[in-house]
Image (cartoon, rainbow, N blue to C red; front, side):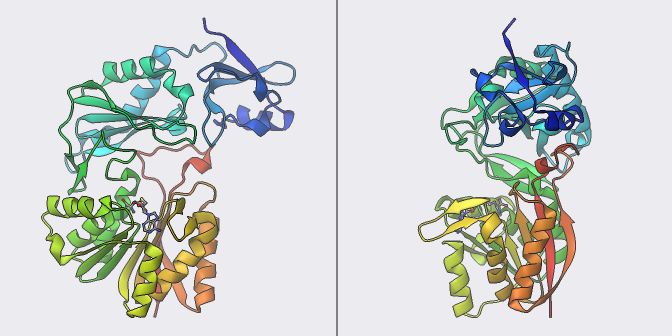
Length: 398
Ligand code: SAH
């Protein structure tokens, strides 16, 4: 038996954990200094040493690990992980059965009972994301569980736990037969090229599936679309397939040009009829204002935090100003798709940014629809901050 460490929970946090809060965080504990080795099983106890829950120690920017069980006698072993993954797989049955969508998340961290771990499926390939050394400690049990439960072409992994909580660059292949990348996945009939062994990001963010479908099916026929922070141009592809008159994709990463050409080409869209611009979005806004460009739809999907040569962007501090830039170059009765994956604020505060941005520009608006994470990104009500995605379709009233 590996040694377990008892963490004493401060009395005012005891009920929080009893009612199912999954994250172990410093402020709630009396003795985090007792934690030494990541991957250690941690028993949360009250000041009088009564059992509350157990979990593992794993350092992430979010906290010190995750609760795994409320049962004192439940062993955290191979069979434990296999039960959790099996349940998660069952809940994604409709995704496995779909012929139109072949890429989705099969295991979503604390939403499926194991924080710090996600597993995604890409047309026969599985990708495991480890978010701490602590969860990586259980790799043998977890990989074995997956192997027992599914058929696969290959399993890949991303270790997202260097000292800054970033991706560790190395060969991501785990087992099976190495893929020939890109592999092509389908999402509601849209094709995307996916690279599982290239960098931290694989080419498409699966959490935006419903947003892409909505853009394609409801809003863009005959419309001009500006896609900012466009990465591989996934939103632009959805817009072009929905009949947009033209898309403009802007991202400052050099890779975005070839990646976007590739995504358009896979979907048989003539990329030369689209604009793909490698530039800082904030410079592009200035250019657009100078040229008096206006778009029927402007998509904003920035990272939570980004530093470019000239600008620092933090969603929490700067989203309102980003919206103001977008409002200026959106046609009357046009749509702004405002998206953020920043987990430090919720939909209420996000709507506050929208309200203020429109007030300060003297324009009127209406929110037409809202999105959060899709069902394969399972979340639990005890941990609302796990539902990080916020997307609003905003009409700028003319
Ligand atoms: N919207 C994309 C995902 C965005 S990922 C999608 O749906 O797939 C964030 C992207 O923002 C990255 O590709 C990064 O290169 C880009 N980025 C970050 N700061 C930027 C800036 N100041 N100007 C332009 N692009 C930026």
